[in-house]
Image 1: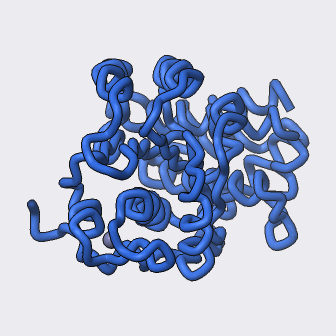
Image 2: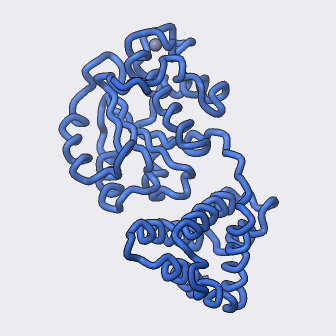
Image 3: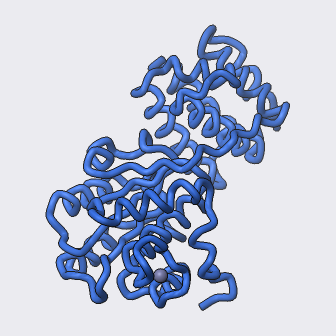
Length: 285
Ligand SMILES: [Zn+2]
């Protein structure tokens, strides 16, 4: 175990814990095979998933689960519990990993609780992984429950969401973009509306470097989150994005993910990636 392992009490410290923990206790009486946890920050979703695993395996009094002191409650935050499987925490989940787990999911858990399989970054599933998991969820898996973590349910495959119970943590407060990024965002929207002013900007030598492009991408991501949640009062950018409609927003999400991947390639020119974002979305608006 590394020195960064969570202390047992951290099971109860995440955004919305005071409301969420009692709900988890109620849900545990008839645990859904698949639970989607959305909202909060990534670390909140992670802790809430561990709290769910602990609630299902805790040997303390039912009304006080997770008790944070029994063996399950101590081992789960450290990731060493026998009936806990965690996917995608450090690297993207592969189909091989999911396939390798199939025999175990066909077996009952080793302890007296439920085997909990947690999937981080479910919104970034490769389609093959999402489909494999969907097939897995379509079969009864006695003694096994699955947890999918994503910023928002809209960013998951709809068929996965429809097979799951969705638990929503409090939404994080969005931070407004920095002034230079805000200017680029405004230019992007102006281009979508008028078809003008964009290429002059990206064509200026050195203007769209990698660092600015990455910051612009994460600002787009943040506005997308606001637009998907319908939280558009505070942001004209999110309001404009909301006009894309659900399919358009999903498309923008995929475009941003591809752009992010492209920007990670050192040989790709950032300005070309930004041009691609601008023109791909204008073609489908
Ligand atoms: Zn316990």
